[in-house]
Length: 326
Image (cartoon, rainbow, N blue to C red):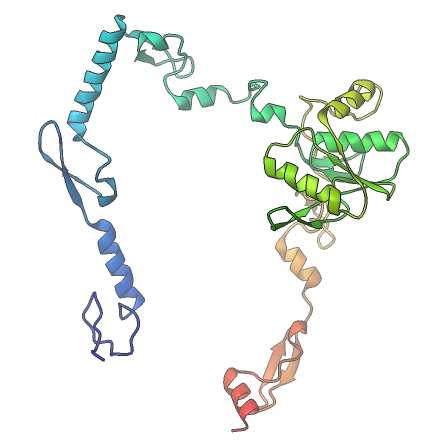
């Protein structure tokens, strides 16, 4: 076999060397050179060579100066086709003047950024995703638990008003779909230990509906769905009489008032399984002191954690000696 050389520095690597470079430094330098190489394309209007990155070849047709000129030509052509002059308006957010075509005269903002800043703190359109969802998770003080949405919290209050016992998200099941794939499914409520309830106003994806239909046939107990019409019927009857009932537009629920068992500070996390205020407090609670043992070969002291009780040797060399006997 022929000897190999590093593609960057030319260092002799040997016939058995499998890589193209002698070290990580040479490999990184070579990648940097490949990333900084430039390419050129010819402007279709003025014919000059424009310097750019290789990944932009075929994306641009004009140089920066000609691009502005051609943009103005396209704007003049559109104005000529419409037969109406451009309209100058004032942005309602930044108060800057901007020019648009006559067909865009009702436009109120100069850019998408100004439009987004103007919508901060204002309600969106009734059909927008942030308004049609009720998935506002948080800790409910009256229920002493965490719920993922207002609908689920209100349905728990409805069950309590009927003096029914429930468990929120009791188990996670492995469901097999029609195409042979497997996924996990967790029902929302286990009511009286006899049947499951899924609070689902609508299925946003076809896969969600497929998983629910598969779970109905594979769960050990009956699974029923609480549709949007059924929920609204309950809400219409109980929203004014049942205490702590949450409605659209109400502020988000407060965070749970829990104290760290190690230092006593208030835990600010909204997750119901969080017990400690920081990783340091968790380590103080669960980390156990290390044990001192001696190596079976060289008798050196070893400081082992409780999960390292089966370790007999202090190093790999001692382990090889102990296993091979030499």
